Image (cartoon, rainbow, N blue to C red):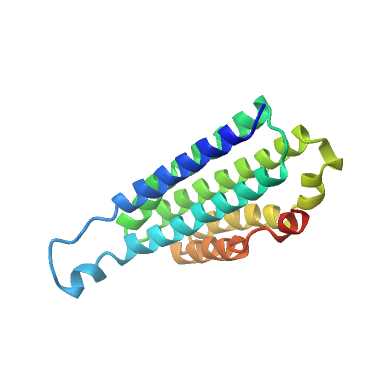
Length: 190
C-alpha cells in the first residue's frame, strides 16, 4: 500500500483544522483598540493551537518521509491521530472563550494528551510496518524520551489546571517549545 494518499489526506485534514480555528476568531464590531484587547484569550488559544497543529504537521511529514510502507494498522492509527487533532478547534474555542478557566484548559490539555498518545501509537505502527526495531525509523526515534516526557508533562498540566489554569497552560507552552524544532533524530536519519 502506498503512503502518498494517506499523507495527502492528512495534509488536507490539518489544513481544514487550521481554517476552522481561524474562522472562530470573530471580528470585533468596534474600531477601538479595546475591542481587540478583549479578544486576547481567544487569540492566545488560537496561537498556541496553531503552533501545535504546525508541530504535528511537521513531525507527521518527517515520520512519513522516512517510512517506506503503510498498512491497515497505520491507516487506523493515523485516523486516530486525526480524530484528536480535529477536536483541537473545539477545545481551543472553549478555553479561549471562557477566559482561561480551569476546566476548559484541563480539557484542552486532555485533547493534547490524547493527540500525543495517538502520535505515539502511530509511530509504533509505522515502525512495525517498516521492518520493526531494525528499521531506519526505529533507529531514528530511539527510546522517544521526548515523546514520553511530553505525555507526562500533559498529565501534570491537566492536574495543575485545578491549582491554576495558568500553570497548566504554561506546561502546554513548554511542551510546544520542546517540539517546535522538528525532531532532529529523524532529520539526521533523512
